[in-house]
Length: 119
Image (tube, rainbow, N blue to C red; front, side, top):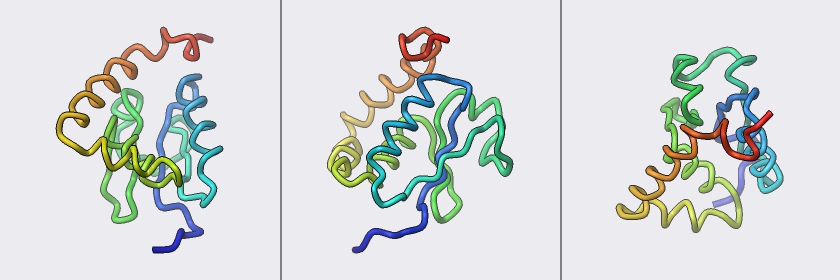
């Protein structure tokens, strides 16, 4: 399977959130095949979900038009990043998926209080 040159995932983030912007930079620096296309929920149109929902968690629109959010969205992002696909695969395991989802929910709910999330 060869890497594609066009983005495979639309990644919807809160561009006003420092944690989200930092996550975007982390992903971009590892996305050598340019498989991710970042969209700001405040500035870009054609949102895959209502704005309020997008503000609560990262969302990705998959090539088939379906949408994943939260931890599952991050898992999908990892699957697109060379060198990180292994983590995306193992986090699909039931125990790891549940723990990852819980951690993601806690971080997302408190992102404005984290050091990278303070203005």
